[in-house]
Length: 266
Image (cartoon, rainbow, N blue to C red):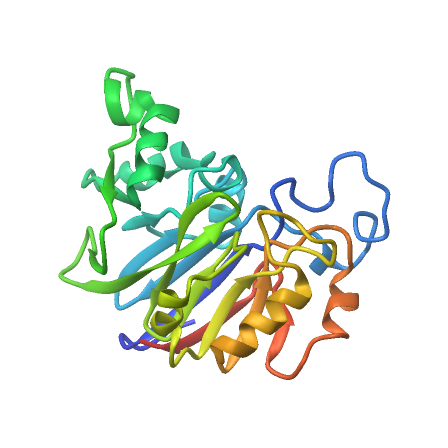
């Protein structure tokens, strides 16, 4: 799919909760569904714009996702937070360094970066492991520009401070697209960073309240407040099937699914 340099192409490579769906050993209606939209890998998002390639979160399913969705390069990883389902596949960025040895920056805010440095000490601290991937932690302190590792091109990224239970984490905005997974609250100051969106991807876990995530109804209410032209809900648990969620959505809102692609303006 060819896109213009001023367009942002987004592929949602995973839209499931931390266990993935189906859940191991579960025989509920969602986990035994024949609908492919009820099979959800751990959350990850691939963005292509003007020759720059970004991935938001690199979870335990990233190797499969990168192969299945034909990810051709990664110029930077944008990390929302340090939980296993969002960073466990970090070492699988290594193949993108085989032909281009320019380091891949991993953008994260300070608390996330410090924990990742401990989790992946062999990458970020020791540096002695043979074949260690050339990744660099880049602390996010405000809007930044990601440069292509291959051509003279860059894209501006706006970090969106959000809350995940007791954790302060980040969402990201590129052009008229924003990605906010693992949300329990969006601070008032962050709402102004979300104005004028064409597409929003927003956490919508389940109906039952959770201390770390928005419920589906809370997500609908938050999406209405933000006012994007289209909102897709992600990080979905196995409590409801895709069709059950879809059938209760207001206009302009829908449950996302693995492999969903769309294009927005930069």
